[in-house]
Length: 111
Length: 244
Image (cartoon, chains in turn cyan, green):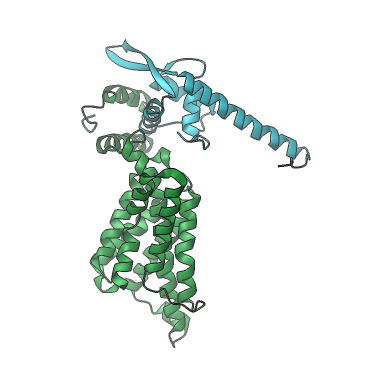
């Protein structure tokens, strides 16, 4: 993953895993809840993004569990993923702070 | 599930999740969800999913293929329009008497140009891909309007490069936007007779592409950037070879 801002879905998946390890379906439901239903990832897009986050080392499979004879993986954030999410959160917060400051009539900061 | 390759162990899990996620959906939503799963399975099978080397390669190549599509459509539209304006008859009468075959040709060029620009801005790629495929199919209907069958082949190759980029790897590329402008603008000047030196041989767009490749290489993307530029080049290469 590059230094550019992360794609929204990837960011939402990391956010969904920030406080709890979850399986694929639970992640999709959590993303839907976080965004008030605005983002409802389909299965292909969800697993495409999860595979990419796994390959990038931002999430990992914590364990596998068998429910009703079916195996499912439980995903969790890696330390790198947590660090990356914190960086993104700080970046977004800084942008939001600047938006509020300017909306309140503040002048542009010196560059 | 059979579409997923054997090496992809998550297929069963994905199918279970898909069943849960599509339970109770209306049939149009179900069709869209199934199509999304089908696309993912095909990408995994072809090694074009976003986690694979192929997916990462086409992330680099697709913006340049879109830039080439937009510039190619723009240059040919400009050439067609210049022909209409320069002809002795009134522009309006020529436009209204354009036959269906020429009309279709212009329509696909408009789709390539406008669709390419829209997709470069990170919106839908549908227009650009439809324009390219229409351009290729049009060759089979009206081969007389084209200089070489290689143009149709190059258009299909370019459409494949664009489609091969995984959806979650699509992004804006200022370098690709600059390439489109760099390739189109001097050609437009020549066609509108605003430029003294003629470059009407397809060489200029190719030079712009080579320059973009050299700059990308120098900016550390390395050999993969050069390969990505090469993957985006068929339309310009064919045009230059026809004009020589």
